[in-house]
Amino acid sequence: MTSVLDRFLRYVQFDTQADESSDSYPSTPAQLILLKALADELRALGAADVQMDAHGYVTATVPATSVTRQAPAIGFIAHVDTSPEMSGANVKPLVHRRYGGEDIVLPDDATAALRPADNPALAERIGDDIVTASGTTLLGADNKAGVAEIMTAVEHLLTHPEIRHGVVRVAFTPDEEVGRGTKYFDVAAFGARYAYTMDGGRRGDLEWESFSADAMTLTFSGFNTHPGYAKGRMVNAIKVAAAFIASLPTDALSPETTSERDGFVHPYAMQAGVDRTSVRFIVRDFDVQGLKTKEDLLRALAEQTVARFPGAQVHTSVEEQYRNMREVLAQHPAVVAHAREAMRRAGITVRERPIRGGTDGSRLSFMGLPTPNVFAGEHNFHSRLEWVSVQDMEKAVEVIVHLAQVWEERGADFG
Ligand SMILES: [Zn+2]
Image (tube, rainbow, N blue to C red; front, side, top):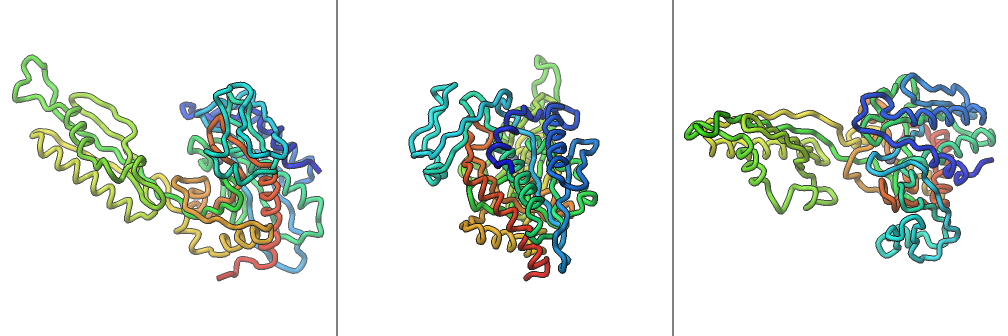
């Protein structure tokens, strides 16, 4: 048996940084090197149906050991790519054995220090073995911790045929960090009825609610003419758009003023010209009605603004990005209930909370594969201060193994 730590230390040394600006799939060819290595490892472990498809998705099967029951096939999913925001090349993982609660200063940059005072989750893990990077790169625990946990659980199930479970499918995917992780995910070919992404943070985290998300573009049109002869004629779309942005609430409805269950509107990009200026927003809320209310507010503020600039006009368009996976998961209560039971059996206190963002599971749930997110032990995502506890990774492996058994025992006919 290979330990989850040994696997993790091996995987983080593959540079799999995704690239938003790339048009290829996966966005960086280096991701394929790790994906190929994972396919080879699955074959060596004796997994069935190991495949790497044309887009790089790697899938495999742990065949059912159940003799009497018809458990539905369940899946476990993790992504191999790392964030474009921080270098993932030449990662030097460091294992801090039996962490004593002190500040961990990373050797390659003395200003990079992991302090329990700033990281309450780290203060909870005194006594654990903590893995960090060396100070100049991310670690890649997001999501290679999940990859290592799923692979270790696969090995455990394959070497313990006495554990009763139905068909277990696993998938390793590219490009989650640039929002394309499910772009070519073939739900029908995957064949699982329900799945879990292993891509969460603290021990016990179980996430089955995400934002619902739209993008909205407001395009202001003015009238451009020679500035020397523009009196009474020019309408400057840049000034109209600026007045509109100034009319947004300053004490509410923004990322910087909301938390927990409050949504927001967020202008993040602008293309400006006198004749035409467009402002790009993301709109976020936990329910679709809340999205509509926020979009109506933006339209109303824009209309009020153009009314102050005779000759100006505004055009708005909305694109759906993703939806709160609760809408789907509420119809399949066994998915979350079995995850709670698996964590209970692993001796873990479950922590359920909504994600102020989306996951691949949000999209997969609406593609017909109900998929909540389970902790993988990842902390300080996308940062040089990323860390993971070895004991958390071991607990996540246990949860996967328990989940396979709970589904075999209880099936989907629950609640
Ligand atoms: Zn992730």
